[in-house]
Length: 151
Image (cartoon, rainbow, N blue to C red; front, side):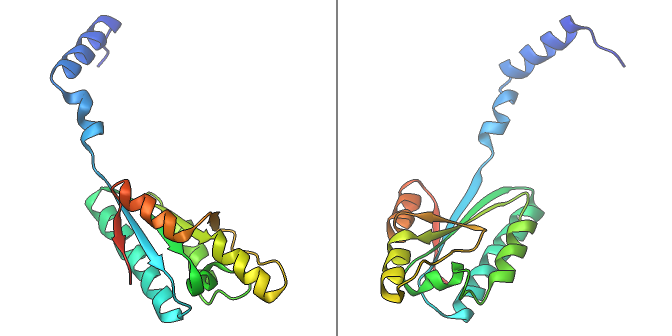
């Protein structure tokens, strides 16, 4: 079946007039921040299990989800290249997250404090990025409407 430009233009005008063009704007994107502030592999794994379950649930529902896992204090060990007990899981979750979006954030205040105490630079895993302050990042996310979860 072929349509000419005039027919397609009329169909688009009808769709816009009926409000159909706003369907994409009406889709809710679920957003959750997950806090990790303990150097405890069980807590780290629980946070990753939460993230995985959230991604899978919304994928099954055909809905979008964004997750930001924020580490600070002793929880920064989760994202340290040299100390993370869950380094392999971080990589796996990051690679398999699509269509969900997952981000791992490391507190730079904590990182600088650890570097000062330990006397050497600290690398974070490739899947993570630094934020100026983990606590402030959590506040910013909540203030912009993100849900909050602490395992």
